[in-house]
Image (tube, rainbow, N blue to C red; front, side):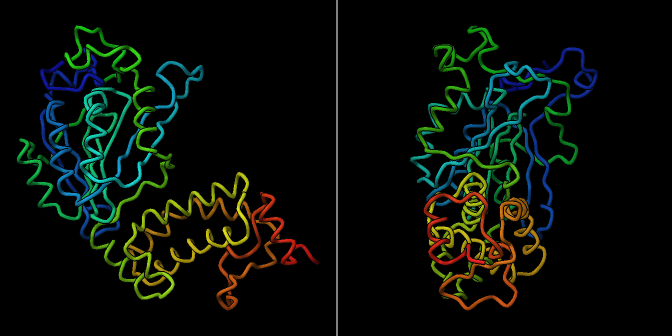
Length: 359
């Protein structure tokens, strides 16, 4: 170990030549996000003792509320018989008042910082800001206000370095808290029971406490404040969609993915509920059509995977399902061509009543 204040979850290899030539230092790099002219990605390294304070300082920039991002492996390391390492699962909490969210996080914060199989973050899509501390124990921040983030890092002793090194630049192992002897744990962790130190347990507890829900990794995205404003402006131009202008557009994108997943399994709602799911996709397309590249392309890229999965779920695609409140589309989009294959009883009943299955 080179003397840097690494979290306990990172252990450098003793025989790594790079570690003997270079010392880990605090600092950060930043760059514009792809397909963005005003949103930045910061990648930073901080000593373990600073991470909590950095999160609290960042939380103060998010406004009144935020949501938690939690990432951890579903099984303990070494529990899989396969040589293929399972990927982590990502969970989001609902939006919660900042003070309430931080209060709920506090009992778990030190364990999440130090465990090598846990990542966590805070975000507010409307504010266009996200901070995530990964299992690699690297801070990643997305923001449209790069001056504010630079100031935050500077106040905590982190400075810009275009040649910044990260733990992933050195050979290292990931360790859970249970891998360490009690004598090597901070006193606040050494007093906990083994089951309380097990990340599978404390992550599950936090998951339940905040009523978190799983999110597919392919749906990880970020909109800057100006992009959020553009989307909000577009929604306000449509009478049927203006009530959604103040909502988090990212939630609509996740709702579409959830709807598609439900349709793949078996859609148990009725025809009205099914049409409400299609209406979500209508809104997404309306917004995309009114925007210019690259924001338009970003939105369509985000929904590309659920769109493809929905196409594969459709049958009877020579028929079209028109919304009752709108005139038929001259060229209906794919989500109105056919109906999902896995129909629950309520949907199938309503389709029969509508005459869908008549030749």
